[in-house]
Image 1 (cartoon, rainbow, N blue to C red):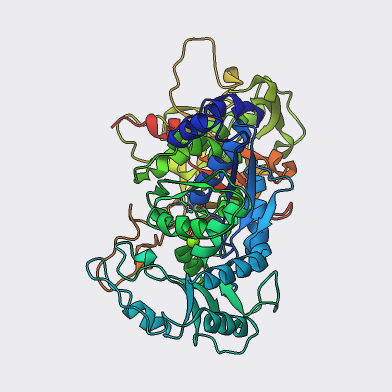
Image 2 (tube, helix red, strand yellow):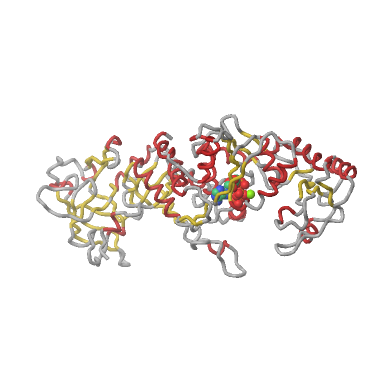
Length: 574
Ligand code: ATP
Ligand code: MG
């Protein structure tokens, strides 16, 4: 984290300004924030924004940030999600120390609070069914209707509530509702449900409870019980704030958090809600939550994204009130920015074409060896031109090499600087070569180029002022390692995947080309001993790292992100 620390300290936004004021006026001495996920799915890049924001405040103000699971809905929750969320927050570089909490730890307390509301005449047991409650809630323009159970006596309410807790009633037969105002202009205030019966095992409390508190009741009270000073959440909770404040006003809580809403992150070509992501996983549109195409933290980690790049992205997008859609390009920019500094450059040919260097063994620079096959020399290659300390490595060169099929054109377009009959091309770190002959199979497909190299151009340059514009990457055939490469494109091919024609859903916008698997790629041998976590730049192809499925015997690499301004593309004049 050291590299980015200085930059991150300069962050300011409207929430930090509120905190500055609260510290100046002495309203708070220690700032306490929290990141409060519901453990009903894996975290996505939108959550990363909330994590960087809340944990970033704790870091910069020397405060505390809690990780709290708002686990009020046992039907949708799972320990798998609880575990993955912790992994993801930690991986992003944040630490909650001892401050790991669960809303379910407060079930007892929340139950007691509910009894207080009943005793104060502020909550009642309602026997309307869920659809009936919905139907009597009214609309934005019409008030709702009072429940026929609204005026039960306090004693009766208390007795039924206790029997609900004891498991005497069926699911859906009864619930506890706040008694506020069915004509309130804010629909959240129209006697919202506080407790419902759910005869479901909870991943933490087991079968202890058969009534569970609603999220809107649990969330603000959990914040208050934890003495959170600033409860930051996304804009869609703005309308809930009135209700949250109502609960806080009624109950004997130890502190009163201030809720501040900020805009959620939306990204082009991406769906963000866990609900939509879960559907993709459960219906096998993708290969699990950590599919490298997913906008989940787990997917991005597997793909090879770095926490530094994601944190930097979150700093760049900032925290504001107005909703917007961020261009996916910005995330890719942050990735390239980070990977450029750390990624070791290597040569990998994704779609190989054989090149035989006819005159190679006669090289005056290399004493003739016993046979052609033995003719190998080791050339120096820098590991990272951005970082001298990354050093150099030796790469083998020999008579038969592979180049990228796409680097050869039989009929060269204007401005073409790569392989074509008669043209001189630089092999990166190696020699100048000229294509002398094109060999085809019986169907007319090019299967081999016969080239000649210039021994005076060792290292890829000469001192005779000769200009060779095109540079190609290559791999020595004899030394090449076969690897599989997985190329990714956006998971959706529409900028806004939720925008669909009538009668269709967002899965209609899935990009059929989001994954391309190349199984015959040729890599330089240094990749065999690479670390699984190591990031690479495959020259001219982008940034890559090993997939989880990769083994030493069967190397598999994910493309993390392409090279935006790859010299490959720039050299072709339009
Ligand atoms: P989803 O709609 O994906 O299920 P959620 O808001 O229900 O998201 P929670 O688990 O409740 O997910 O989220 C935990 C925290 O993350 C909340 O404070 C929420 O406001 C924040 N958060 C969720 N999505 C985004 C987003 N796209 N941008 C910023 N913050 C987000
Ligand atoms: Mg939610």
